[in-house]
Image 1 (cartoon, rainbow, N blue to C red):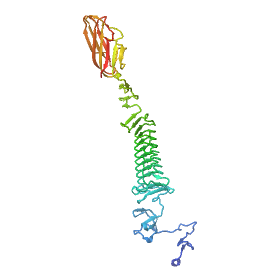
Image 2: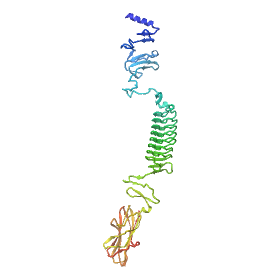
Image 3: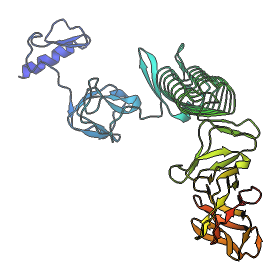
Length: 485
């Protein structure tokens, strides 16, 4: 054994200034160790690197730069957990650098398991931006807004291909700041536009210096270049606007052709063909100003709002009413039917004015009170007198003045004669007296009565003498009704 050791040191001495080979007589490096059989090696063919259970308490120096060890257990170095494996000393960073690929400390191309979101992450541990590339072309960027201010994305938030980036040179915008883009081809040529928010393919596609715009939907504010303070929600909403500002458009293709400012469009295709300014459209079609459900103009004095349909206040079927959809004529008044409907009526027809007469002399019986058969209408502004049953029937509630009178031919008796107003078949007021001598008899009555709709008024005469006949002359026997309130 001693002879072998002596021989070994003699050999080392002999080759101290030459290459050393172990298992070979023709070394190809300063130290060349060959296996016992390259094709079929045994389990002892290899080199054992020094094993350590923990890193040295005192760091190596520059003289040990590149020194290799094998860590056998998990340990902590500089507050960082180090898993078992090969490590070399990197003196410039004063750190042990691992050589191993270990699923517990490296991300694999085919996926990872056993990760802990509290400690595992993709990114940097220093104050540096993260750049993602595909085909060596920038495809994504994560940066600290403070570091990137005035540089690259300028505090912009971008998710999507060719958004806030000039696709011809693949460089982010150098001027626009505080823009938010979600989707492809959003603001690809923006230069000085600020504070814009765009979601959807080609939203704010041609924006250059327009600021404070919100575009949500494919093609929303597509043509906008310099317009600002616009809000467009819906595919192709305000798609044609290039320089208009202060527009609000909500709905698919709402404000499609708009190029003005200060417009409000609400609904599917609302204001589709409008190109002016300060207009309001609320509809679910491309109807024009004369057919949209609601149309308005903020630019006139006074401002206008137009409903191209029936206006209802409350539900007419319950307790509200509906206004007419046609224009009344000069002097007409709006009248309700009490059941939710309204209509235009002529002024003279708005109140009740009625006069009636007898068509022929009327013989009275001797039974006392009996109705006079007024059956000839002189005028009736609201068609409220019924000649079949000789009565006035009110269409609406109100106060009515009643004026009536009759004459008889000559009578020679001392009987009691009277005239009375009957309301709903019950005597309301009468005028009566006894007759003396041989002459005609005249009785008149005037009163005011409150009537509800459908209440009716009739005129009665009192007679007990046979042969009494009412004179039908229109100037003597009459029945008048006038609504006074």
